[in-house]
Image (tube, rainbow, N blue to C red; front, side, top):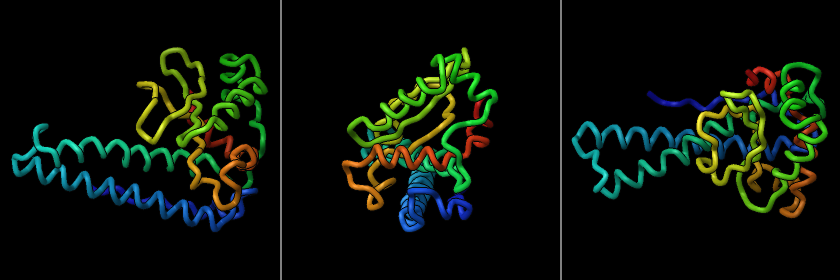
Length: 196
């Protein structure tokens, strides 16, 4: 089985995020897909040959690397999937806004918290998650791709906070401007579908 890179032609014309930047970002995403496929193929081959062993350094390192590549692929799909050139800075009333109000008290408090998480120093992802057992929403920072994900939680809104997501449109010191542009392009209908 092979993963195929998804196509996002509908994202042309985002506000504050150039088509050129997106083209580069799509190629980076395709790299995650390709490396995920290569690692999966190599690990499967080693297993078929009876070489799947924790003491084998190649097997162990490829196994450790797979979650980085896989999560990089999937998080990009969430990210691209919650963008649209027809975005609106605030969501319409619905189950998302109800969940935000129950979890944070108000949309504005949630937004301030999400932006605070999104503009923290470092590389990673700002992610709004839903706890499947309570329905509560929480903003989290994920280092790299595979780190800091709360077990079993569902990503609802995903923002790529790595520099490749906003440079060269913005300087390395202007992530807050990118975050503002990101909020002009959110497909709230796609986000709402992720809420249970």
